[in-house]
Amino acid sequence: MEFEAFLEQLKGKRLLIVEDDEIQLSHYSKTAQSLLSCESASCYEEAVAKVKGEVFDFLITDIHLTSLPNDNAEGLQLISLVRSFSDTTVVIGMSTDESIDSSSMHHFVPKPLMTSKDFERALYSGYRGKHV
Image (tube, rainbow, N blue to C red):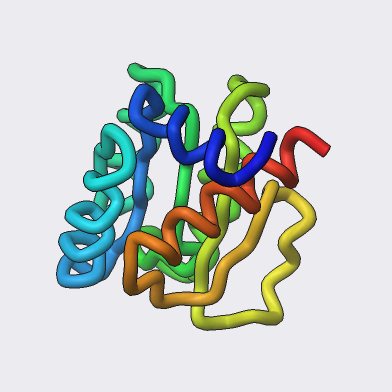
């Protein structure tokens, strides 16, 4: 699917953004809402509750969530969980640590995502990574 056609189809899609930094989460949510329907979660537990109760077309999650003690990669656990019960959700990981093993994701993006163009590119690359 071409980029412009993909952008047209986003309006009817749903995204869950998971980010433990409240300022970044607020910015990401506001930016993404201009493109598609957007939900947010600030921790692993909140994200798990949402993905178990709702269907999302896209998941963008920070890899290094910090709510579980001694675990700095809850985002990878979330990705694994989502992929175990949804083969339709496009999964995108994000982090400032670009050495992350991204094999469980459809796409990886370095943080921060600042503009709607950054989100467009991330969503499209994730979609292409899933549908290649």
